[in-house]
Length: 109
Image (cartoon, rainbow, N blue to C red; front, side, top):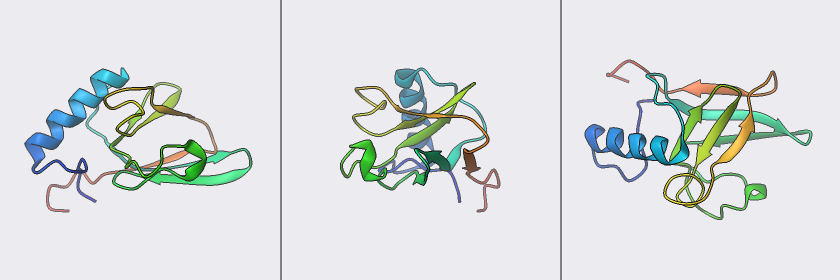
């Protein structure tokens, strides 16, 4: 999957929005960008993906995941009101029960 940000019209705009979200969420900007994240939450397997809504227990309504950042000991999942323009991101512990799938670094995919 090629890197994108929902509602960004082109790659330049997607990079600008990604940078702005990273700054607001106090997250690092890296070359490797997360597309999907899987983790174990209270014994349940959970998954989220950029461009889709978070599972209902996270109370983000139908807000789309705009970006997922990999930090030192955790992941930060950002939606419009959770880490992108207001509020705090949804935090997921980085451990053996969590795994990230990255966007392709191949420009043709």
